[in-house]
Amino acid sequence: MTQTNTNELVPFLAKCGAIQFGSFVTKSGRVSPYFVNMGKVCNGEGLALLAGCYAKIFQEHFADKAGNLFGPAYKGIPLCSATAATLHREYNVNVSFTYNRKEAKDHGEGGVLVGDLYAEKKQVVIIEDVITAGTSMEETMNIMSLIPNATVIGLIVAMDRKEKLVDGKSALQQVREKYGIEAYSIASIEDILKFAPEEYKEQIENYRKEWGVDD
Image 1 (tube, rainbow, N blue to C red):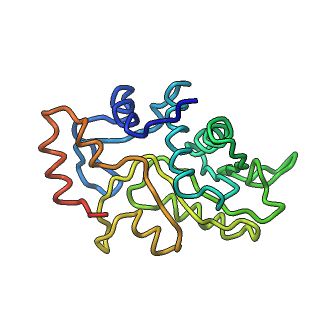
Image 2: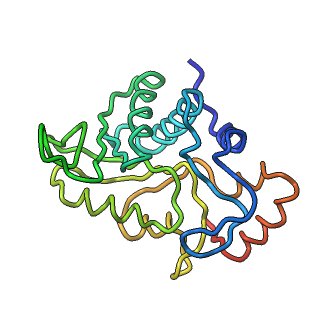
Image 3: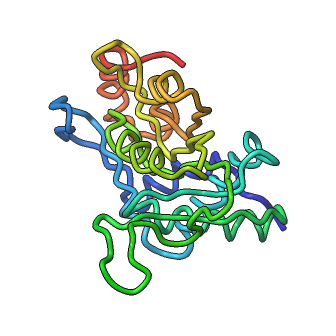
């Protein structure tokens, strides 16, 4: 079976509208010439491509290390489950997956977690969509810190905007330092720049110079 080429991701995201170009105000208040919304990936073709990219990064960096994928609600839910299925199909790797509810369920099995409930010790890789300020990652790590049998060893995101935060570092750099884990992205602003329409390239380059950080 042909395995996914991660270079295919950004052109697909631009084609399906998951990457948009124009003028967008981000959570930080900055005016960005591009916006990434993974919610636009809403069909089988797109999910298969995304999952293939996550699976490839997992195999490159976490093979034989991690046994569980955690997908934070909500966008991480289809991403972690599809990636687990892809790992099994394309690499013959069988990992479990877990995701959380935004609110604890008070009936049935109850609780916040769904999927592998970590009855046994597991090394965990978090599957996220986009990282800018790292806020959602902090929320996820707070959840995982309450689970004795879950040890987070890594993070994979689809897109790293590589924007400097208050301390001058990017969110991905902060994650590596704060939590002592490996963190990787499938694509970044440099990849967006390669495929951006000509009329937006200068704006993106200027935005990158003003707010961007190096690896």
